[in-house]
Length: 265
Image (cartoon, rainbow, N blue to C red):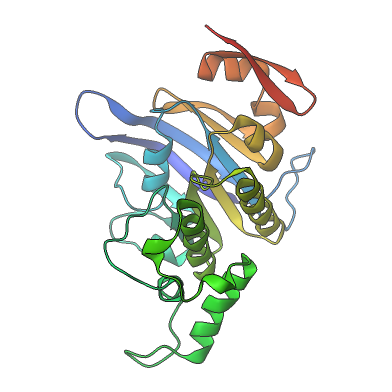
């Protein structure tokens, strides 16, 4: 039996009574890459959530991260129930689309906020600092350590936020549009890293806007439309010309590994 990365059962949420942001959403997302015979292996999984603006992607992710409480239904991440009485940070790290800091903080100190402290109360051990520096080195930004978070560019800050998530050492990472503020080279760099992490066992769930990048990197794809689940499954079977036409109201044609827009309707 295939274990689940996320089990979502009849989840709904509304910011007001007029229109639901997520409506009766149910889905079981596998916790590993799936072979052509639907057999489980030991690797992790890279899951992409795509869909038009306003389809409920960020709201769904915030419920999975424990930031928003569902109006109805239940959700579990790796068997851990996400409720108002639990702390999902034990199993997942969340990377928001935008993080606004109202005070000055060094990059190293910011990353340390995500590392489990091994020192005495009020002190940070050398091992903890080393974990933070190792995370910065993993993203090749160790030279950022003493820089001020407020003086970083949007792309630089996004890399640091991802570094903090890595430093939490959780089995799952949830990312809301992780390529925000990144140029093309930065996007590929981050996606290559996330893919590598999934090969090493991490469970990655990312909201993405670029369908071609989702098609290239994701093992499993969820499409949302009108606050509901539109389609879900292995990426090659879900990201198709017909599904894109129906979900995004855009006609595309496939050219090799790419989908090229033809017209809207």
